[in-house]
Length: 445
Image (cartoon, rainbow, N blue to C red; front, side, top):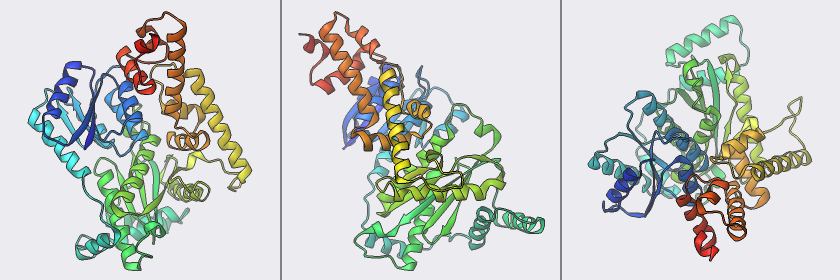
């Protein structure tokens, strides 16, 4: 049974889509509707949403921004975009953010249902146990194997920091022969490290089986990034798969996109899918973004350093290099330094939320930016240090303040809704009833 969220600022469209899906015969447990991006985000944070159908144009928060925030909160949520704009730029950006389809209004009912069925069918793919998975890979390993020369060349590019003119010319010639295109000028790296010891039942992985699983990871990378991302993926060790992501000036300069958040979304999605389909834990390292291919060895060094932090945070698996402070000579901080640094991040986040929880449209991304850390790391630290996730903390503050206003003032529902940061009184009432088990008017009585 699936939970579906429909986000559109036109109530008639929301009702029409909800009625269509409700009568479709699909295994749908609950359909939620939101009339703007902020309402939709509340549902994503509070409910178990499997599929999001979102409009592109929704006022204060666009469908693109909603997708970006959704992928930060729950990168595995599937998305279908509905738009009145048949614009290639919108469609391309939506697909880069992981949209499974891009439908143009007016919506064709059969087309929408076919799209939803297709997404739900792929979500329903059962996970094989590892013995069956390995057997299946052995039996069907007739796919095109990665070109060893290409793998070797990419490893040389990211591991050799300085080359003489002759060696550099030879390397560039090899790139052309292998079909490697590194035009940038902006680059980042992602590294996936498979933890074969986490597989459990198999009791160890044979060398050939490890190679097959690494090949499966390479295919997950290819499927996830597709043609929408300009990337090169390759084996970088016996248990590592590395990805070079690159942007041209126009793509990188798009002010509507937070490139680091997108990299983290890819990292979290990779971790989720490797665990889901291969049954193995992985650790993901993400570098900063630098301009110039000469910095690729530095980016490779950064992903290795980011992965090191899994030894400190063993219950966390996606690490962005920029979240961690290294000493002037590259030394890791002491346990005491790290604890103090993390405590300060959480304390500042709490202070910011207490001061701004009533702000309409407050997002995890905004709180993270004020703390100069990624949303992914802030979420992890906040839950680890406080025992509650950050958005639950925001809702607690909003609900406690709204209760105080109901009990001690004669303010109307819409006025209280406005004061605690909600776009609509109706949405405020839904959250209030879910939190307290009664409506605002029932509490007032």
